[in-house]
Length: 372
Ligand SMILES: Cc1ncc(COP(=O)(O)O)c(C=O)c1O
Image (cartoon, rainbow, N blue to C red; front, side):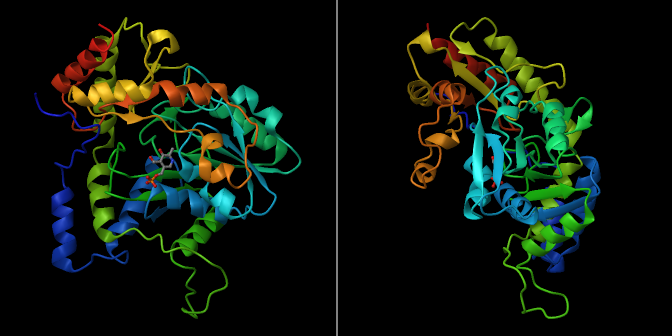
């Protein structure tokens, strides 16, 4: 059998090694090193924001953002059913209530047409999550948030370098967050960033990230925080990656276009939209959703593709199907049919930054062969 095609492989052939060596030679390996602030100051303006707070991962970025907004017991936060569990962690831990919205069947993002019906007198925030490469339609979200005085948490974990109507993703939330896990357009190994234009909110996140140590009385604490600091080594890798963001976005778009070309006419699978009227896909991952009448679900297809040497990952399991959340009494009797179908029939093909055209052709041929 020819080489296994991994679902993700990052590209680290720029200045990453040079900056890492600098950390080791200077001894600055902790979060106190100079690359952290440099990375924050380079990243925030790149996504159109005034302040950046680098953190340990994208989940921590969301946790801190939700806490910094002061969301707590009884507050309702609206978010898509089809997302990663990172989105609900701090909502649930704080005693706030996650309120779900089903997905748009074509973009796989939150169906913003259903949003207004989910707003109540207890709604305090909307979490807008951009899924898999196309942004969620932000204008209706921002309009409802303005009308009802709601905060917007924009989860742009997967959206580095993407724009919505020409403005950078990450520039829309009261607070917005990113992840730098190795399958992202930019990676730091593990890592994340909170961005905002609100200096007070950014300062609160800075404090929450660092256990709420106080400048004057270091070991006296007025609030519970996290140790969610990013190390100088991670930030060094981030700086090297950030300098290549445009190249990375262009590279992923070429990969997406090649997948679209070689899978065109494959009647058994729905492919990602190449564009909407507000954005061109940046293909964070190349997802496919098998038609329900094709005789196979995602699990069976992924097992067969693994045998053919092609790595895949399942789509997100919707929040209302999460055992851990249902045991808390959440979402009883609720149904989100589009999110459920995406979960059952959807998965993504190899999508890493280091993926080669010949691997894309092989992966696509393996998918087609499942139905030959
Ligand atoms: C939409 C979304 N939000 C949050 C996260 C969490 O990021 P991390 O893995 O860095 O904690 C991810 C991770 O892939 C994600 O896709």
